[in-house]
Image (cartoon, rainbow, N blue to C red; front, top):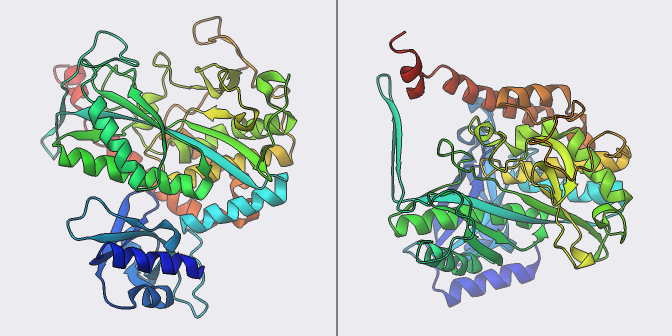
Length: 460
């Protein structure tokens, strides 16, 4: 860890009269955990030397008989937490094994992100990937839900209700514009720069915040920080927010679209003027890899049973493994409005925020790398380009679609995972653990009676 990071963090402790050090880490599913330590002189030196021990089995990483692991702070992620009453300096953490070498844990998501960027350089000639996420979420005034042996229900109350689409609705009818303004100021405290925010399509309180491009690891960190900030800020305002892909029946779903391009020595390596979408051969191969592996990717980009209630036709949701310029019905859209060659890019539209952002981004990158290595041409493979809404026109029998549910996505992953193993980035242990967790989720909801089943079958 560079000494300047240590000095900067010690200065932050002194300047802000920090009383608490907070180490944050996410488990495989993407849920955030933390542990807090009272400050004492030399605490960061001690943490960098010894870290903090924790139970890896409670994170779903290890079995109980071999569960001792170590959290090691990444000082480059330091931020003064605006949501703690005690002045708190917060860090994201790496996970270290307890062996004599203090080896990195193979499932440490930050470690995987760094390995993926190294593989990118070795395999494609590009030296960095750049990501711009869009965060869609709903704001509700009240939420209730419960599931018991004899009860199962949810109820959401919303202060907004528009007629049909509410995209870019204006105040005073957009009642949460001030919430978004304040939220963007909070995100700035986390080092997250917002491109813009607005009311989204959903008629009952759907919002969007889009952030600027950062590298892979920073973007994944920022996704976790954005959710953390918005959840905490909503609680302060006595509001309820959700990133669930489909929180309401017959309403627009929440996606987490990802804009992506690669650079070498600071120059965009996808750009070629005059080509379709101004995307060159390298970019097309990258797109080809993503679309070829799209079904398997879904196990990481759309890893919840709720994800596939969003991925249905009729709500501008991407359901087809195709690409097109400005085409929101395709999994990959090349934006028509980009005028700066250095930001020539495409948008991968299927992902949602139930994803572990590190695994999601790394899996996408590995699919693109496989496309470049194996020269997977999306045109020859029949993935497009498509400039029509094929969902409203004559069906094309050659079009492949995303999985219809999480079980199909896991089946696709079982058949297609070699691209994830390139560079030993996704280990057998990680893939097996991921599938186990997700199969348990499928079983949990699959055996639970649904309230709508009462309406359909109770009197049969």
